[in-house]
Image (tube, rainbow, N blue to C red; front, top):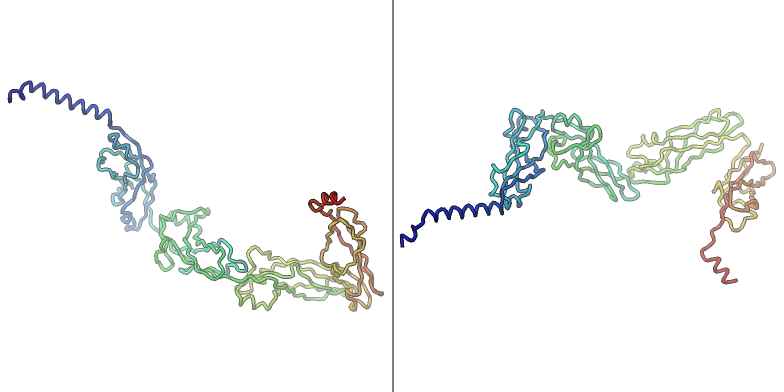
Length: 436
C-alpha cells in the first residue's frame, strides 16, 4: 500500500504545481489587477485649532480636492467610489514649507494604503496674522407689509455693530455687513431672525466659513444670526397741504389765490407723529409775493418740512415735489371756478363719445372796476355749442359766457373737446337685419 502512494511521487508533485499555476493563470485572467482614477475627492482638514492657538489663521491655496490612483483586483476596484475614501490634512503636521502631508484611508479593508497614490500628496496653505475689527451692521428690507403700513424703524437686538475675526487680508476687503429681513404681509411689530451677509468693497459676497462673527460684547453669534426688531408705521392719506404767503403785490394788483398740486399728500409715521400735524401739513417754505405783478408757479420739496418732524416721512416711492400755483390779478379782476356741470351744452352730436379738457372746472377771469367782490358763479351763465363736432377728432371750442352788467371777460374761455366714434355693440347689426 505504501508503495502505491510513493510510486511516481516526483511526477505527482510536478502535476500539483502545474495545476496550481493553471489555476493562478485562470484567476488572473478572470480577475486581473488594474488601476483606476478617482477624481475630486475632498480634503478634510483636522486640528485647525493648532494654528488658531498661535493667533494665526490659514488659507488653503492649493486645490481642496485630490485625485486618487487605486491599484487593485478588478472585482474590488469596480466596487469602489470616491465616498469610500477619506483624505485628511492634519494641521499639526504643518511643516516649514507651509505644506501639510495628506493621509488616505479606505473603508474597504481589502484596499491597503500602499495600493493608493494621492495627487497631489500634500496640501499648500498660507499663514496669516489673525485680525479682529468692528463693523456697523445695516438692515436690508425686502417685501411689503399689509396695505396701510410701512416699515418705520428697524433695530438689531444685539447692537448696531459686530466684531469680525479672520485673516487680515479678508478683513481689509470687507465693505459692508448686512442683516437681510423679509417683511412681506406682516401687520404688526415683529422680531425677525436674520443671518448676516458680508460683502467686499466691490459688493461681492464673501466666504463666511473663514470668518468668526461676534456681537459688540464679544459673544459668538450662532450661525452668524442676529435678531431685528421691526416697528410698523401707519400710512395716512389725504392730508391737506398748507402754504405760507408773505408780502404785498405791486400796487394795483392783489393775491387772487394759492393752489397746490396735489392738494393732499400721504405720510407714514407713528400715530403720535401723525396726530401732531393737526390734520394738515404746513410747508416750511414761505412764498413771498412782495412786489409781484403776475401769477407764477413754484416747485417745493416737502422733505425738508417732514425732516423737522420726529417719526414721520413720505411713503416709499412717493414724489416729494409739490407744485404751488400763485394767482396774481389786477385790482378789479376776479377769477371764478365754474364747475363743468354748470355748463349748458347745445347741439350735442349723436354716435360720439365726448371728453372735455379741463374735465372738472372752467376758470373764468372777469373784470370790474367796483363790483368784483359781489360776483359769484351763480351770477354767470355759460354754454358751449358742440355743433362743430361732426366726427372723431379734437376741437377747441369757445365757451359763451354771459356776465351781469358792469363785468367783462379778461380773456376768452375755451374748452378742448375730444370726440370718438362709439363702438357698435356686438351682434347689433345682425339683430337689426333680423328685425328688418
